[in-house]
Image (cartoon, rainbow, N blue to C red; front, side, top):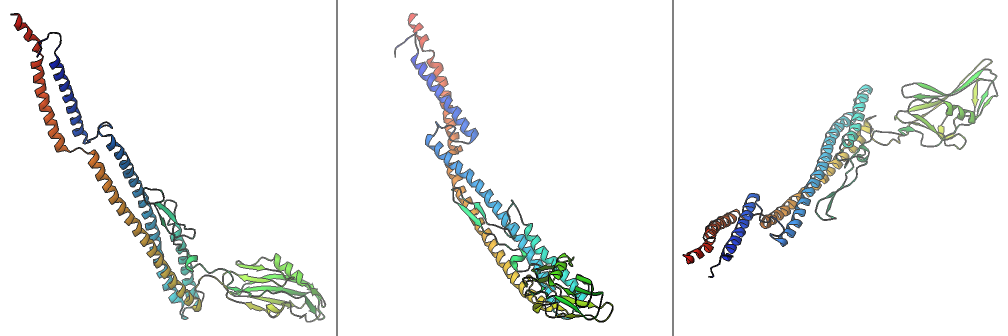
Length: 405
């Protein structure tokens, strides 16, 4: 070895080795403090690329789990509404069974009917309020809901709506045409006969409770006076009809028809009252063929839709409709339950996949504490040795002084 006082190459080499050891010690300590094997892309370029992909997938699976959780909440909300409907339907069946018996008096039947109608409205209320995240599966406007259930485009699970409103179940409140003429009708001209003056002609509608409503009235009619059917039509058009009663069609085309929406019977009656001078009579029926006779016609053809407990027959029909509705709701419950099981199965599968991804991330990224600790101790021992050695090497140039003695 050449002795030189101008340079100390061994010292430079030892110093560089010591610096390298110190860098390695710092890196090892950083791995142990962070728990990560890869501290920068330079540590493992290919590993960093793989980690980026795996981390992105893991984050996506977290979002998917939240999506599935929302879907389960939608299904559970709908299922709770259907469970409530089953309770309502059981109560309705109990009332219909009571009403199917002829032993009830009018007041009892009316009380049961009012309760029944309220329960019918609750069928819709229970499903209309089953909305969460702005989605409703069971109302009359319920629609399917698509859930993103995977990390790839197209990985969707469609939750099918099961509309369960009263109308869909066939249990809507009875409306329209319970007692209405099923044929078009018309009026003929009315002619007052007899030697009379100041006679009156009236057309009245009498409801089931005996309340009369005047639809047309003509006075001061003398014998030989003709009241045109068209005038009767005009009077009817201008009359104030009882609540729930409507009139459609015209006398001219023979389509005149009265309708009572509440399902109770009513009667149309023509009345001639004689004035002075003698008796009054009608020459020819004011009512034409389809309205039967001038003496009055009870219009009571049952065309109502929906269910009601107005009599034992309608109550029996309601019992059948309720049984069918109970079966329909039970089927809907099964559909929702099966869909919830499907979503939860997807969730379990996604969790297993994400678990494997996390394991792969750990293998690439996590530091082996035991191995790294052993490596750190080795590096520290080498550092101590290099430091001591460097102290010795740094004295090499001073050995040249010995030659001058």
